[in-house]
Figure (spheres, helix red, strand yellow):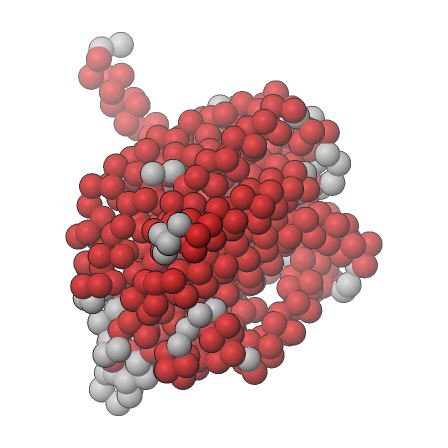
Length: 475
């Protein structure tokens, strides 16, 4: 075979695999065959899915960053997103548990049990969010002030917060149903739902924020409305494919009848998973509050801008690491422990390559990237410093995310919970406080604490991965 034909064959394989990944093919058996192909089939749509999730915040940031009183608006968006991380934590924790159970049942060749487990998780989501939505609507202004916002800024933006927290069910369902599809091996549907939601958000944001024709300019409130409508449309797309799709999961109305044994089993797995992300979220909330109180409105606005941009780059790596969760769950279900381990190492290698590339981009081009989104010079200076310091730990972030998803995909949700508790609450928070307050470093001290703590968390994850408890967990 000539060199030219070898290259053509390779390009043909890459094209075919990419097309298969984007289309979504649940007929592929992730418990046999090429591990590299399995990772790629899952990773491509998962990476694109997470990119779309991060685009929500960036689109809002771009349009509100050019409004009058943009510092107030950016701070409101950032602080609200910080509070929403608690809802994200609940959603991700439940999604992790659902993915683990669905993937295990699929690995055992029992799609009916997988479908029933998925529907019980949706029942749990409705119960949780009925409380959270009411709480967010009533106490939106108080939440912003508690987070370090000035009274003037809180008055300016609390309705944005009301809408965002009040629509928390859309956020949770978007994560949760995507977790069902990922567990079944159909990451493409999860990706497409985020694409649809984001396209709607991108179209609606300028219309609802700035006004268009008969549509009035809602300003900051328009950003919340656009995001909520976009996410709702994404959820409707998911629901359609749950009931009428051609995948391995076949949903029927009787599956929505509460099965308290299954609900209890899901909560048992999800509780530490939720706790692990709540621990991390509360740490980020504390850091946001610490930056706001030591750096003022400009410090808070700059930090929130850098954080949104950092998340845009990190979330695709989280999507890549989600491939490890599905592969670990399905291969453990099929009693293929060695294959599960190889899947983790292959995914980690790809994650390191991706995050190293992103680190180079953010270190070298942070100022032009940030200047594209915001105009305020003080905000830009702080945001550039924050992004450059936080990006130093990108490679460790990538490895850590793969390990977290390995544990969660295996159903070993207590291990990453313990790691997060010690890493965030007993290390990151005290370190940030001491640097910011005791050494008078202000927001810079907070920025430094982030990569230091994330590196320590990743090293702890490597230690517990090698101990191998995750291989023996039953779900």
